[in-house]
Image (cartoon, rainbow, N blue to C red; front, top):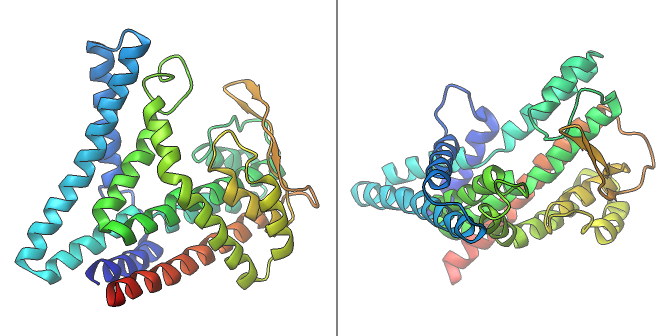
Length: 321
C-alpha cells in the first residue's frame, strides 16, 4: 500500500506545486542522457539504415533499463532502512513523474494572453507547447492549439504515468517517462531518425496503446460528471478516434472535441510546409479562448477520476488478490 499512498501524495504535490523551473527534474536528466547517446552512436557507427536501426534499439534499451533500475534499487535500499523514508522518496518520485499542474499552467499562459487580446504573446506561448508554426495563427487557431495540447497530453502526461505507477510503482513510472521522452526526441520520420528512432517510436505506440484508450473512457466519465456534452463526446469518440497518424493520439482529442462541441486537428503548417491531417469533431461553433479553460477543467476532472478508480482497483487487488 506504500506505493498507493505515495501516488496519492505525489498527485497532491503535483497539483499544488507543478514543476518549478529551479527544481532539478529527472526527465531533463533522461533527455540529456538520450542526447549524449544519440550523438555518440551517430558518430561512431550509424552509417547504414540497418546499423541506424540497431543503434536506436541499443540506445532505447539502455535508457529504459537504467531509468527503471536506478529508482528501483534506490527505493529498495531506502525501504529496507526505513519504510517511512522509502515512502517519502517514492512520493517525491511520483510527484515528478506526473504533469497535471504543468500541463494546465503552460496552456493557461496562452489563455491569459488571449484574454488580454495580446495575439503576439499568445502565439509565443503556444510555440512552447506545439510543434506547428504559430506566427500567422489567429486567436481561434491559437486557442485550438492549446486545447489540442491539453487533450492529447492528458494521457501521456497524467493518466498513463499514473497507470504505470499503480502497476509497478515509481520505477515503472520512470520507465514509461523514458519511453515517452525517447519518442519525443528521436521518434521522428526524417532523414536522421527514420531508422534510428523507429524502435523507440514503435515502443511508445505499444506502451501507450491501453493507457490512451483507458484515458478516453475516464475522460468520458469526467465529461458526464462535469456536465459537458456526453452524448456528442461519445459519438465523436466512436467516429474520430482513429483520425491521427498515431494509433493513440486521437482518442482523448476526440472525446474533448465532442464534449466541447468543437473541431480539433486538421491541417497545419510545420517549418513552412503544409501538412494535411484529418479533423476530429464537428465545427458546431468556433473555438474560443474559454475552451482552454474548459479543456483544463476536463483534464483535471479526468485525472481525479483516474486516481480514485485506479486507487480503488489497486487497494482491492492488494487486499483480496
